[in-house]
Amino acid sequence: MSVNPRPLVGISRCLLGDEVRYDGTHKRADDVLALFADEVEWVPVCPEVEIGMGTPREPIELMAHPDGVRSGNERVLLVGVTSGEDWTERMRTWARDCVDALRPLNLSGFILKARSPSCGPHGVAVHSTPNTGRGLFAQALVEALPDLPVEDEERLRDPNVRDGFLKRVQAFRKP
Image 1: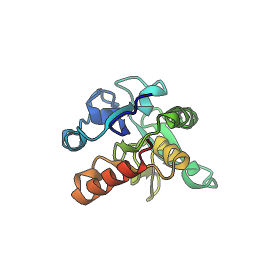
Image 2: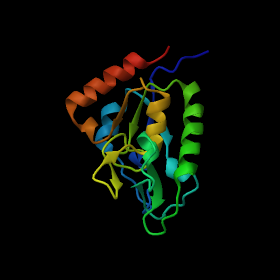
Image 3: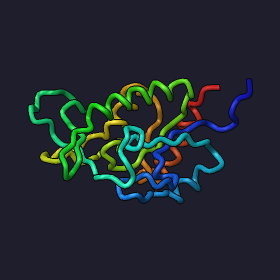
């Protein structure tokens, strides 16, 4: 059995330049990709496309749960901005299944799209509240794999964050 010479790192597909965003565009992060180009092998994921949202599509957002009694990320809903369509359970179910499918790959890290209601690892606006949260896929990922190094592309532009992330990815790598 051959061992991949580079660690596998998950990444939001829009950051690779795939036109999967709600408006049919991408958010290719050339600067971040160039920093890691020779260091890792990418494993692309786009939760919104994977749960059946088209491209282009209605934008989605996190909203406070109306009963307000649930805990953690259970207090939020993932809804269409205009239609109010509730994507929450479809995303949570898919995210759990996706993390289960990624587990045997032995990922060494994950780079997520900042502020995305599905992928944002922190600081995602939760509308109707002054609070921020975590995107639903990001939440499932960090709950299932709490030690996995996870960052967003914006934070990785900081040399200290980037260097620390790469060190954690190398240390997390399973032979």
